[in-house]
Length: 261
Image (cartoon, rainbow, N blue to C red):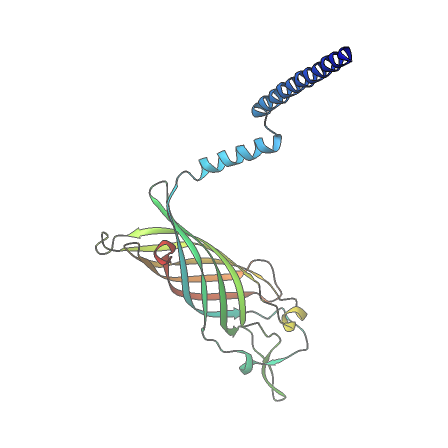
């Protein structure tokens, strides 16, 4: 009985020792793999690292960036050339033509900063609710049977997403230690997110994209707020059976988010 106990004890001791040695070897192997993985990057990770490094180098000269919220009042009118429309649908000219500026509004955020320590710029992203007056370039008449008419009825209320990039030139006006005036110029882009009317879909004139050329002035009151007045000259970004030229005046204000929240 004592011999059996001794043999069992020895067998159990050998088994435990074998398990411990095996675990130690496996732990060393795992640690080695972990060490190797620290020096090996996945190809995707390597690409991400290079992209981050490239972006850091690209934007290193974009400094003093300030995030602001802005709001503005818009006055808009569109000039419409419906000469390419030959549909039998007629609209009385006096009912659709107003030839004036209607009011809308915009809101969003913008970033103002300095490039290479001397070139000032702004980027903005916002939503526009645009109401326009229509000015039809072509007038059709069939006297004495019908009054003056047009073949096309343009949408005069729509919503767009707007992206703008502006260069700001400091103007030597007044005491520049207290306030600053800037001349502003640059492109902007509008994309209509509101639905297009059936009249525009029928005539194939439902163009959603508008490219603008912007210029104007801005007044900066010690960085507390910015007052701006911009003019936007917009045209269809792609070809259309009814070319439309959109004129807009924006008058508004932007305030730094850190002063609001």
